[in-house]
Image (cartoon, rainbow, N blue to C red; front, top):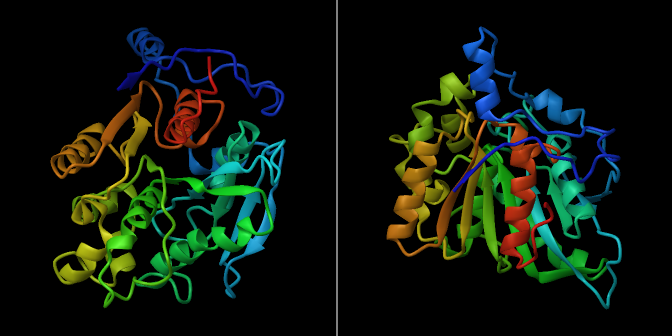
Length: 324
């Protein structure tokens, strides 16, 4: 699906300090280039970190390490009589701590809560943190997801209506999280009791670790995949099979692979290849591409790609679109 990035009023204008329009359409960008101008600058991770928040959320530990926590945000009106559906949000950053944190995914989590969906925005140890990498990074996101059970005893969230959404490396972890129920019990990644989920929204996500390994230096700029796995894909094939979403097909839940047209971390050809493989194994998978946007616009609620992410999550929860 191709979504045009036309300028429109922002539903969260007051929240976003009167940011009234989204990035110009690709047609406008091409027109500017034809007149000798440059296409609009794409957003960067730091830009997303400066988006104002209405609700900072409740910071709650799911483990003992200082990085084992999440931010819980509840929509207005949630109560024990009207429990809110919930989205688990996983930030990206090439599995490397200097690149991103929960602050990078907080604008999406906040906007979702404003739209009626509770959010559990999770932090986790990256490969450069003590205990992170293999298997700690995976175990952290699994433990964070399982922690929805005790949270539901204290807060009005509905654990029968869960969607997982992750950005970039977090998209990889989101897809993996949906597959963990099928792990062999001998795997070091096995553990806990996974909750059923309605689906996954991979936002500029990395769904094929072997494919991404060939591009990691020109995208992440660091040895991302081998640092996460503890070896190159060919040197640790068993770990690759347990960790790479495309190796774990079918996931058994619907997946949406959404990114901007100018996202070079998750180009459309790579997302198409995953969806083709997933569909061949019986999964319901589809690609959504937002014209003109890039990698970080999809994490920014006032951009067209960011609004498309919110609507994709709501769609998996059988909720109507939040945008006109």
